[in-house]
Amino acid sequence: MTNMAAAATITTTRKRVTEPCDVFLNHRCRDTKKTVATLLYDHLRRNGFNPFLDNKNMKPGDKLFDKINRGVLECKIGVAVFSPRYCESYFCLHELALLMGCKKKVIPIFCDVKPSQLRVVNNAKWSDEDLRRFRWALDEAKYIVGLTYNSSKGNLSEIVNSASEIIIGSMIELENQEHMQMHHHHKNMAIIAL
Image (tube, rainbow, N blue to C red):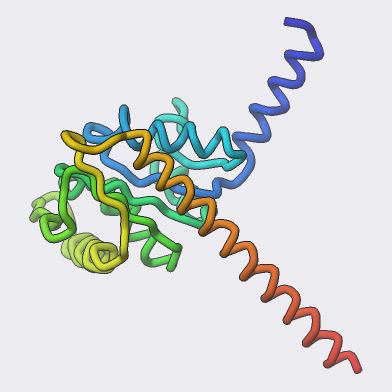
């Protein structure tokens, strides 16, 4: 590798690490890391987005909650990949509660689970406040129209492509809204200046 190529690789890597994420991928590793989550991450990267996926964005030495919380706060869209063991994970529910609490647009993908099957488990290690937040976030998310995927019958490529198209469309919609808000703000400032 030439010095120029190495410098370009380092610059690209630094940019990727320091750029805020666009899309936060919330998922249960043991259920979906090797399928929907990683394929969706790769597909979004190829389309120019900077998604957050724990095993791709975190490295040894990172403070777990700091990195996750920053990813949620920076993102414009959250994708909640619900799966059979999703509700057993403190991290999944914490991320979902943060996404919902920050009023981020959340796109649910129900993998091998129906919304009605999702329930927060009573875990003695979790505080009453955490359980309340988790139940609230899960109840909110269950009533958002999402995608469904049955791994025994479905086509993984189709769900990843569908989710990507929805995310891209949602990002365009959000950017148009931001542009309109900026336009109205500048217009109002010009009127005030008169």
